[in-house]
Figure 1: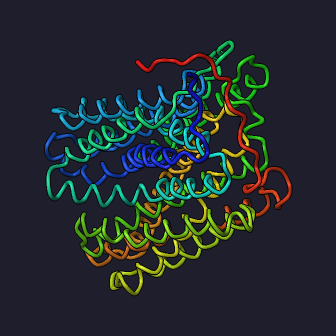
Figure 2: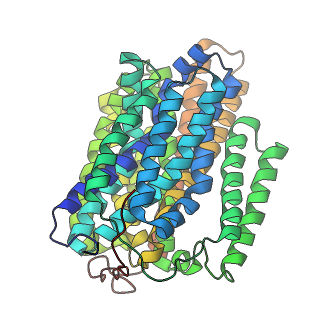
Figure 3: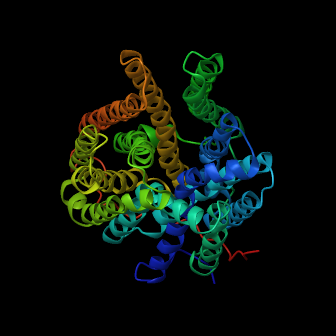
Length: 499
């Protein structure tokens, strides 16, 4: 008996959603869960402040640079196989990191996590894309998945605080083993294995090398700008190299026999707008987590657990908005209305944060802003992710999904580097203008730096509102989110055993 996608009425598809949701949560929260554990890990392993950034950067470099390759591999060797390999590899890398007895092993494990995360993240979204083809079910599924993608960072902060304070910093890595084990059982049982007939497309090796090098240079350049400055030769050298390689990649894709990323995927107006929206939202979102966390802990004296709990209402609003948007508003109004509305709300929430000072209260000042921003992200992410993968040929679903993750990762790297630099400059200017420096002046300088970051974050969202309003097609033009035809089923050959 040949294996195909589960029937539309098969309730197992909702268990598939739980499985891929767990994998997505694991990958997204790992970008922030380790941040809370860094001070404890540093004290335990004895590495310097200068070395500390590599625990974060090693993951993001490997993850970002290999995402498109990971997405294409899921197209070529099968989503179920790639998903399972990604889960097992991520679990092993996490266990190695948790058991690390040296800084070098911890960094190597984090890089290995990034490698397998680059397999896992786009494959999870591709499984969702090819599993849910009925418009109403697809909307619900993407609402849940988009909420996980948007809330994962905040969940990571909370989980990191609980694990670090209650157990040990190493459990921030060990926890992935348990999540991966549950997801692995679910994947083996519930994700269908779809066999491919006919000749298997070849991997675009030159394209893979070009785009992986470009993404590596881009993320490394922005990461180095954060620590070494924008005028450092390594910073602009990496960024310039990334531009050259990216240009070469685009040129190669126009003539490659088996392109890694057919340019028609990105150049489709709706999909291009969706990728850009995810990038801008990622830039703004990382700034929120970074500077609100600094403010809560350093200015208001919150503990790691209190900081994580402070973000919970934002997560609740994000989930609420994601469900309302994908089930009610997006089918009625489309992404051309909903994404700009979300971007505008994001800008409003960021402006609200600029009024925070040393005497601000959580209930009166911080909570309203976080709730508005949570609702904004829940409006932006599911609509953008659903649009980004809508109507893509099934054989390219993996690489189209990888572009979503790539956009979010690059946006986060750009946002973190830019906002950190702008905040540091604002703090230095404040201190220079208020000499001699006292403890009170130093505290005010920190608040001034956070405010600067929030204003720029508001600017990101404002630009996103304008661009998304201009770029998304009106309803009735191109593919409709509610009336798109299901992707054609893959050719089915003889059953293939899982081994």
